[in-house]
Amino acid sequence: MSLSGTVLRFVLPKEVPGPEQLTIAHAGDILPITFVRNPKARRASLRVDPAQRRIVLTAPLRMARATALGFAEAQAGWIAARLKRLPSRRPFVDGAELPLFGEPHRIRHRADKRGAVWREGSEVHVAGRPEHLPRRLRDWLTAELRGRLAPLVQAKAAKVERPVKRVTLRDSRSRWGSCGPNATLSFSWRLVFAPPEVLDYLVAHEVAHLVHLNHGPRFWALARTLCEGPIEAPQAWLKRNGEILLQYGA
Ligand SMILES: [Zn+2]
Image (cartoon, rainbow, N blue to C red; front, side, top):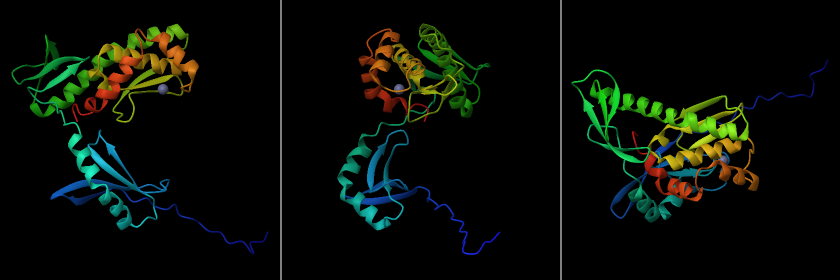
């Protein structure tokens, strides 16, 4: 056994630096941007990340920082306009409004009461210490959504005669629903704010993925038959309001 002529090299994976917070000056304002390196990027690009309420500047690994920053500076007017248009945060605090399955409700903190969370008319009451309110409310909202989703998923899955093993609720900010391997469906817990027809559509969509893994014509035909109403209205609703849903409890 000879090792001659063989040079073994251990190549370390190139480290991708984490995101950096940068600022650029524009018309007397300081605009914050998040700078990220992406090994797959071929050029510098800017995008709006409404969920994290930020503008992201992405650059290839080898691009000089100054070059990337220069690209962003040339787009400063666009960045300023998009930052202004970001939806405002809607934290869970006493007196704040939130839509429960599309219906406006007001949050009431009940320091005097024991127990957890309950609904009274168009109010959602949360007992306990104020610092626990956001978590308690979110747990309750997640349970409410689960209660609505479970029968919908069962009914639609029965129609296509496919079993569903599990329904998980996630804090996904990039997608409302997904159909994973092993017949697991996932949904964003923030859908608790959306009207029932939007839930119905998303369940129809993910259940249709149990049969068709793509978004081809046969997938859409099945999704339509599984949906109670036309699919266009809920799709348009999500496009219009999706960014706002992400701001609740954020
Ligand atoms: Zn899909």
